[in-house]
Image 1 (cartoon, rainbow, N blue to C red):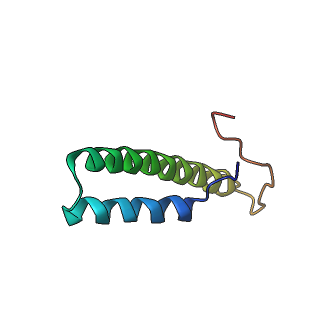
Image 2 (image 1 turned 60 degrees about the vertical axis):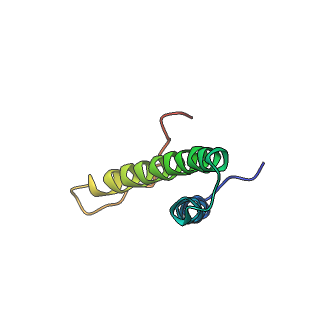
Image 3 (image 1 turned 90 degrees about the vertical axis):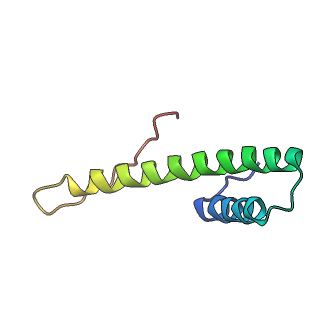
Length: 76
């Protein structure tokens, strides 16, 4: 299984939003699309939080040096 990228998930989320805003979906299809949108939004949020933490690690160095340790997400 390929690892999904933030950009891919964001594009999928945007597509879901367009479908829902279009108003052409049945109730059942709208619910399925909404569920998919929630899934993609959660994934994007997680990736953004991980990126923010990585930036924080780099910014904590007061002496001008950058550390190279790998950030480990909480769920791994």
